[in-house]
Length: 380
Image (cartoon, rainbow, N blue to C red; front, side, top):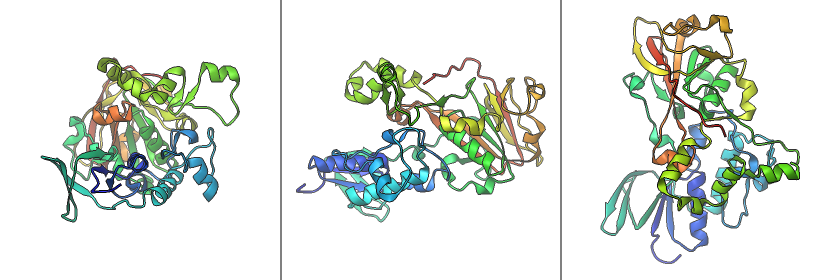
């Protein structure tokens, strides 16, 4: 790798670190900037588990010399190709170890500006240094693409915060919390909040909550393996095609690729979360935020829709246009909202998922919800 590096990688999470090992293997000089596994260490809730199975959770080096299986065996972490949930703590420790062994030249600095130059790009660092390269790889994750819907954006910062701002959830103990969203982040947060003693409910636009089931540690029969071949994103030949032939998929017509991203898979929680949600956390479905306002020291959210799963019982369901149950109005201290965003980041993830939002200390928040009867969810 003689000469000055021609590539800059911005971000030191799983994608950035994996790209760095591939560039090194090809003899391509690079800079890589960022704090290793920063989002995993500081922007995900403690107690979370990955939705992916162990075999599908590797950081990738070209030779496959440092897989999650090898890391867990070396350091005594629980592991299984399938059927053994991978905790946030395990994945974070794996990523940090991967970085130390395979990307030791990581520069723990922050890129604060990226501009075009006649020869490529100029990166300005937080310490004032300027780095010139011909190509840039942006692998900063989703936390820099926070989206707040217009119905909530007017709330002041003390009432509204993004889910990525929370790692420690214990401060929500004893508070009334509403999670809005139907994907993995929303489901995980609702379960974790319930388990620490928060009064929590989940509001989602889709008519049902989907849970992804990969399989168990038991061997699959030949018939099962042929009919539903396993892939890193689930079972089935379509999933296998998307994971095994990404470059072929890339050459499909654009309308087919975009339609696939929008409709295949979709928001879903991990199978292990099902028993921690169903029957424990009320699910108010086919709803979305309509408005939120601060008034008279009480939270009086309103909604449209008539579909509720979990508790309270069906006899207690609010009618269309009625306020949410009194437990929501009584002391709602935190509100969470999640709305889907389709854009470059969602397309890069290939999942079409959205973002999740927290609105905290909302003792004075009034929130209206509206029905979304035309919403259709794609089953994995």
